[in-house]
Image (cartoon, rainbow, N blue to C red):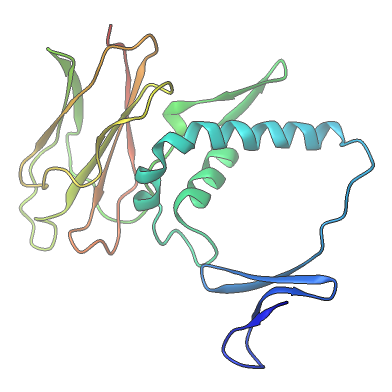
Length: 208
């Protein structure tokens, strides 16, 4: 049984006959009922499934970051779905049948908020990332906050979603030693949460 939204002329959610109605980000869609597949998937389909699974696995631990960083990406999708779409289109290589994700190409944020100048990242003792930038005192940007993520693709990421203001010029991110390298990213979120910047990849670091 389907549920009508906004009356008889509005979209519906649920099953009606041989179709299913649903909405995503306020946009209504319809699709046919699922039919059990009997044919063996083609090579290209198998590869796409592997890419999808790899992207899902890479991004799942960083869901909280990309939900904010890809907020309002476009009218059709945002957040995790948008981040995964970007990753699959721009960050995946296939080498000898193996799916390789290039962390330097991954984004954790997308938007038009300006980035500060002279962004730098260094590893300090004890096991702490120091991310810095030239402080910004421009009206309207003063209270924008730094989003920083350090991710070793093994554990949950370290970092902050709403960190230091632009005027502070730095943020410290403590991490634990890892057998895999950390990949560090920086973006800025508007104080009113209306928009965000593109993320910047700050490099690969070993913390042993």
